[in-house]
Structures are given as C-alpha cells and as structure tokens.
Amino acid sequence: MKKLLLLVAIGMLPCLTKAQSVNAAPADTAAYTPAETYCVVTPTRPIFGQTVSLDVDYGKTNEPDDDTTLRDSNGKKLKFNTLAQAFNYLAQQGGLFVNTLRYSADESSRYLFRRKIEK
Image 1 (tube, one colour):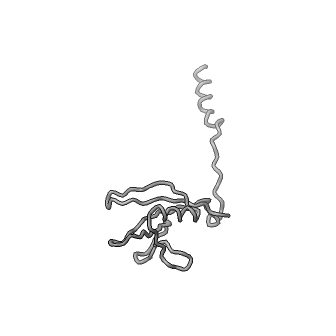
Image 2 (spheres, helix red, strand yellow; image 1 turned 60 degrees about the horizontal axis):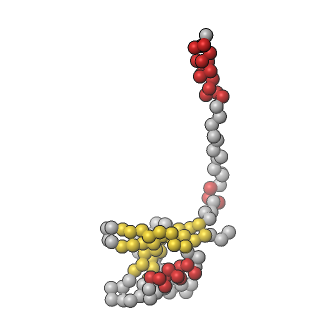
Image 3 (cartoon, one colour; image 1 turned 135 degrees about the vertical axis):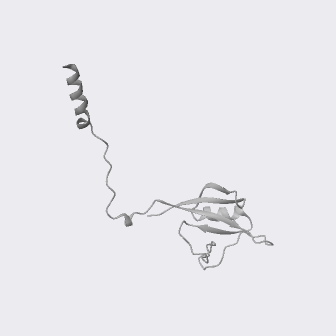
C-alpha cells in the first residue's frame, strides 16, 4: 500500500509543479531600440605621416569599397596628432572606452567603445 501511494504521489508530482513562464516577445520587434550602441575603432597611421585617423566599425556589413574613416560634420576626414587626442575626441562625442581587442594575425590593437542612445 505504501509503495502504491508513493507511485501515485510521484506520478502526480509533474502535474502539481509550475514552471517559470517566459513573457512573449512583442509582436513588433522592429520598433525595438537599444539603450547603447557599440563600435570598434581601428587607428590608422600613414607610412610616413605623423597624424592618426580612425576607422570606425558600427557592426554593419560594409562593401569592400566603403570608407569607414571618422569624419566631421562637413565630410572631411578627421586627423589627430596622437591616439590620446583621438580618444578624447570620442569621449567628447559621448563615447565610453570598454576594452582593447588584440589581433595576433596582424599584431594590431582595436578599441571597443560604447555610447548611450538618447531617447
């Protein structure tokens, strides 16, 4: 009798438990806007030049001939004397430094920045 009662209790256990429910995603996911945006910054320096320019990757797929160099509001390429000056410019534009990414293939460093999106 005890074994039968135990089997019935174990058999009823899944019916009595309640799993955590996950809220369904909103129907219109195209309206979702993130709170932050990230970009990968690659500093470039001409072979015989002293200035630094920045290539900025926002994660969008680019065609091979797309120019990702950082530009001012007039479309002119921005050039900086040092990498610190370039990072200070990004900070003034609302960029926050996140991490350094090292690539062993070409022994270069890239820098991850984020910026809060104003709503």
